[in-house]
Length: 214
Image (cartoon, rainbow, N blue to C red; front, side, top):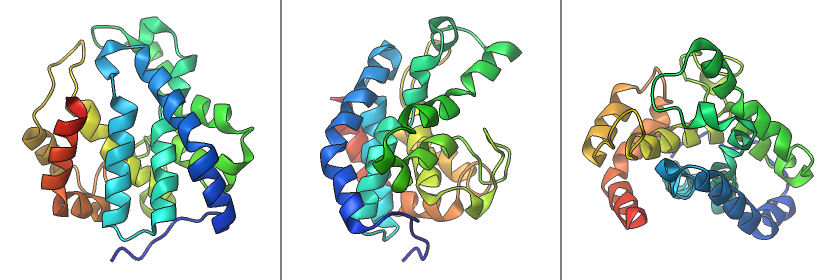
């Protein structure tokens, strides 16, 4: 069993997040996805896969539920980005890439007023879901265990969903190819422990992605 756990508030606060705020998070994630036909169902896919990975890592159900909420909201900061950056069909230039990399911080600022999301670590997961295990990510260049566990889980789920969706600049990958890419990036982009959990339940996650795509 994975020995690390989330740093989070008392069970009562967790219950508030997972019940009163879950539907809000799901709706807001869907609103972000609706801006772009290429990211349809992205937040739902990330939330479902992240929840499955959290359980496979041995986290309690209440903590897996918090990660599920954070995953629904992981891209909420894209609401604050211009369409010209989000929907550009070709590569981004340096200025556009700098703008895109601000979305985790924008998202963290959006949820900052919701105390329950901050107390349970959701805000921190949103802020750090693009950090890399090797320290080469953003916005703060955190490395290894300094990255919140939930963010490390969401990073794998986010990348899987993104690779399996059509984008203006490339076609969707099949699950087998996306799986190989996640395994290849273990220890660099992704936490090896999370990748190992992904590999242990890969057939189930593949079936889940097929179901969500229908």
